[in-house]
Image (cartoon, rainbow, N blue to C red):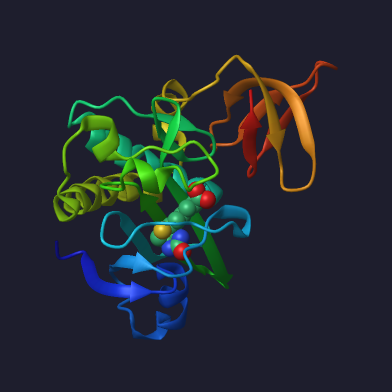
Length: 244
Ligand code: BTN
């Protein structure tokens, strides 16, 4: 695809860090897609570590620029989650979203996204990472704290990582075009319908404090609306659902 520049790495500390270090070399009119067979220091949200076995998973960072006036930038990772879900639905799977953008199968985590945005004047550098458990086996998944699954464990077959990445790139590109024009709004309804725990009591962590309330809805910008026992509605742009 002409719109992408692809960089394939065998082993790297983290594709996010690689992208940041090499940003000056990238063509800013394209999306640079950096993928690594293995990461020695993969990172997740809130500086957690992100583990992946050698050669079995997809570890990707998309680097591109957006206008800083672009609407709902905080929700850019939702667009990647929705794109992956479309790709998997086309393969007859039924993934869901755990807000903000974990992609889940059987209530277990299949993929996570990490967005890092650097704004300088009117331009944003977007480093959008995604880790997908593709062919990771059961014994590897047991090493991860959170309940996790992989495509191979879920479907009992081996997946073509490159084929999956190509499909993801295609769908993400289409969705990104729409996002640039209209922000999160065209994705809002689809996203909300894919949401786990909607209408249920959850414990939510915003990076500082825990809140217990009902997952009420998603705002048209992609934020999480939490309905509190005192009948107030709180709205969060970042954080994590810890438990039900
Ligand atoms: C999360 O769920 O906390 C986000 C996980 C993001 C992992 C991906 S793997 C490719 C890219 N490089 C990294 O170091 N992290 C992201």
